[in-house]
Length: 309
Image (cartoon, rainbow, N blue to C red; front, side):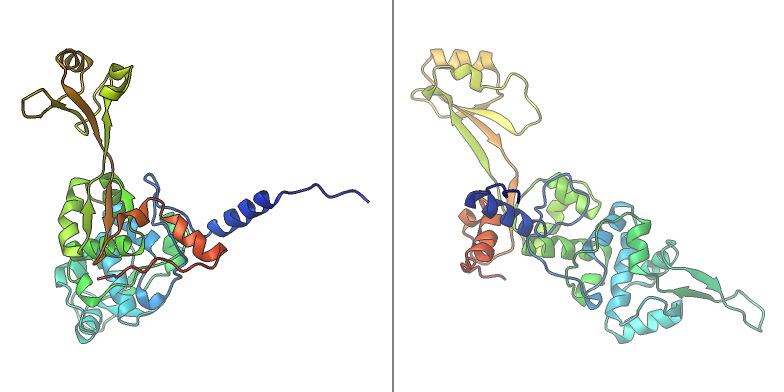
């Protein structure tokens, strides 16, 4: 009988953690759809999956995604047929206030199968729409895996701006941490600067992060000054003797000149911001967002008590 290869305890633990974390992926910049820190599951009453929401927003079909969520919130299911008037009346009775123009544009986006109804009288035939299958839409638009959805409120469906702000709010509530503005904007189908418009309505707290290197402590001080400046997120803070400090571009010639005059130079690099939607924030908990989760799963430790707003 062949002898089984010996596997150390550390290797077994690592494989166990990797097997668990296959279900818990991190939202690194560059991903195309929403990621999870924990398994939240999917409930059709909450709306369409996050991956489909983000894909439609990126394709300029955000109003169609909003209307799909409103239909699910109004207890419509796939295969249900309705006219514009019937849908508008159902949304109104459900307390969902959506402008008629948004509903018409969403119904004309191509996501809702449409057919003309036969009517005995003359005139323009009335159009009948069919609630599409979410599984089909996920495959059609390559939205990714059907993993989870964030529950929204009726007030979040009043406009496309409120819809984006709600998705931004729920993502930060579910997965607080450090992200680039480009990643947050790509999720919502907007530019990175436009995401600042959703921080205050969503109640998101933003904390800038900086990496500071005091080059006077090093022998090769000039090697710590970047040769080429990429963007505006890197600069030097120069504190001359008996003079107030000031900022300067990160150039080695400038740094060498002020070092010869005995100035104190700090190279500052701005990192990605940290985001959270909490009443009281202890940012040390988010240095590695996965550690509290793994401690809770592997060792049975309690997760840190965080007070959400």
